[in-house]
Image (cartoon, rainbow, N blue to C red; front, side, top):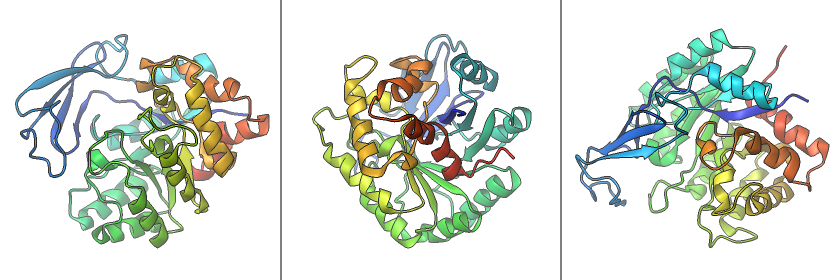
Length: 329
């Protein structure tokens, strides 16, 4: 069995946005400089006192060993070799900035280790421009599909104006990776009903729900059987939809590895949808703030004793191959 990390990040520098109004730039030693271009309360339906106009906040995003706050592909490969990960899929996030062209360069250099990358497309553009950008990313650059983080992209996924874009994604046989957001109180977070509406209109579209949809699992008042997660998992009835386990290590609250609460969450997901619907990913390097890269793997590979070896083969390799149509031949 090969092991595929279906959610890993690389970037040359941080140069992106958060929630459409917060600018993010690299600092040093794993930190980022973050500031808002709007006053607190100017974002419709959302108020945050964390970022106010003109006030810069320095945040730690990754470990201080990343001296320039960059993540080179060769560094990721060394981590993969260290713990026995065969291949990885490169993910993006608006906070890091658009890496579409850079990912093509990396795939040309390291196609034996990176079996694909996901594109970013700006949801604030006219939908015709979005379709052009998507076609260039998939046909021109050879990326697997597109990833949206609904709060940072400020997108209502079932809004009819985006239907030509989703149709284009289906026609191009691309994948939608969707992160429903971590930020409690942001109106664009956890659009589970809207995602269900979207799937109802485009049932053949391949969709990977990142981080188990987050499903408000950072809220420690969510207890077994995790009612919001149950809502998310009902989407498992769609043949072309999968759930990803990246960064679930952050859902353990104050727990340390091997994260009993997270194991319970994985069990609930496994019992609801089965192993062929679950995809392992690390969320390297951001998951390194709570555990090692090896522990992100071993949480599934060794600690979840309710999983058989066959189950693990699906979660650690086969499901990713199905969702992203990975064929080494």
